Image (cartoon, rainbow, N blue to C red; front, side, top):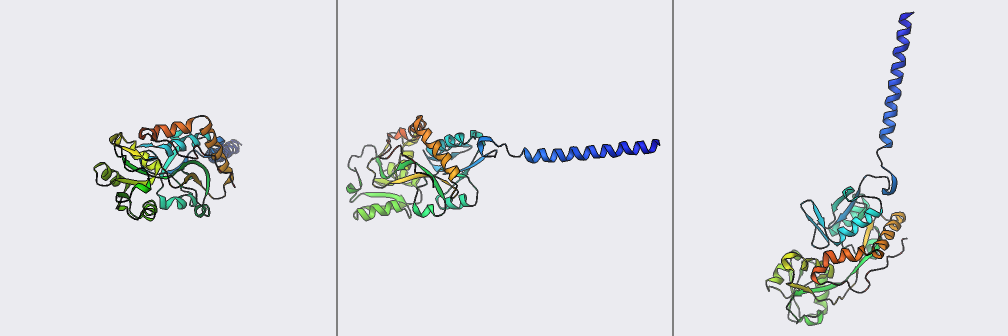
Length: 283
């Protein structure tokens, strides 16, 4: 009798332990996602440039630039604290692949909205309208636009469409191609070239760097339109609308202007026509 009683107690203990273990497994899987305003995840992966001063720059563990500030604001509106953002390098040629393969949820990386790109990814925005411009030495008053580049040495990166546009427009320009914009800027400061061309935001970012402050200026005569958008997974209209709402709020509460001023203002840069922009409808 005593033996039977001991056996029953042992069996009950085993059942209790089994139930407890099952409950622990359920709780573990249920607690894996935090839910709430951050879409059910603990972190968000955002693609940015790592090598564009004033826009997206990685220095050690610090990330700075206008795109970075824009991304932080939008992520905050989506429910993510800054320390929940995982920054991912997003080179131009890899942006569509990073989105389509789920390596990032969003991309803020001077990502111009084009019909060709919209075949592969969706965009929220634009959050900024840039344009091709010229960077010259601060004391140079001879270059006021592309039409004054005849006989001048113009620098851009190898294979750049920006440089080719100017070459087509001003056949007399002396095109100098370097591997990076940083090399072009160094050549401009040392009088090796007369001007550098690419998006005005990129130019202002370089001119705003401490070592170049007061030495360079953006001409301020844009001759193209680049509508920077937030890249995201194709046809994710829900996320697109959330990001669009965040962009609109950022513009309305003054945070958009602050991000521009903090990152590009030291170059005396003023955003061109179309800024601040009205984001497109999500579809």
